[in-house]
Image (cartoon, rainbow, N blue to C red; front, side):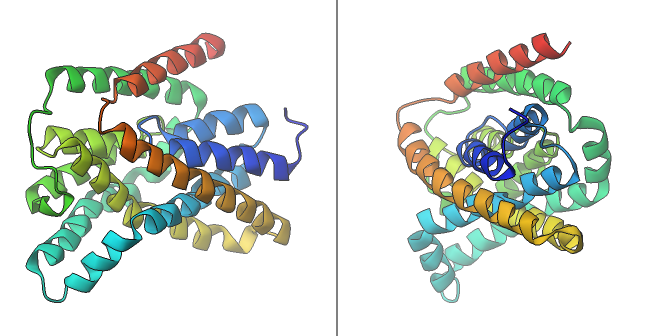
Amino acid sequence: MKDLSQESIAVIMGIVEGITEFLPVSSTGHLIIFGHFLGFNDDFGKTFDIAIQLGAIISVLIYFREKIFTLIQNSATDQKARNFLISLFIAFLPVAVMGLLIHKWIKAMFFNPLSVGTALIVGGIAIILIEKKSVIEEKEDQVEDVSFRQAFLIGCAQCFSLFPGVSRSAATILGGLIFGLGRTAAVEFSFFLAIPTMFAATIYSLVKDMGALSYNDLKILGIGFMVSLVVALGVIAWLMGFIKNHTFVPFAWYRIIFGSFLLFILI
């Protein structure tokens, strides 16, 4: 597989990013694993993994464009809309601060398949326990009603996603369920919170590494971007239907089985 062209690898990685970014299975973890086995884990590969998240961000903007436009439009006159935008900013702050403080250390210590496999298993068990305890009785399911306190606590939960294999989606969705949101509201808030979080991480990475990127590198990034955008858009639409009648337990078992397989072949 290491003999594949960079264009082919970009397509594969774009598909992986698009499928896994908004599911509670860890897109970063999957990209690290696929990059490892495809021989795409050099410095450019690591930049690629972060940069193609921009495609997934755009897919959120496209899917929720009407709600986003309405929120921004109403924020001038509607306190509820303003409060929701403030809630997103509050939820973004913890991971922004923690990312600046410890991201380099985490990248050096935990960006490897062994750490990812372990985190997948631990996260899968956590999902099962949270679903079993069922913090999911009848709750407020309007994402616009997220309080500042809930937003901050969900933002703190998102900090766990700095560790590859944990999953930003899993951390924020489960955080939402634990701290009082209904399932639909928790998932939607996770999507909206992805916009500032992933946008900041992507732009920071691109600005930092732009001088070292060649024309061919930019072409490879463009391929990954477009593929991840199209695939992620389909996944968002599917997930919004799935959560109406299902829990996240199937994703938990996938994490445990896949993580165990990884540990089996790596240890």
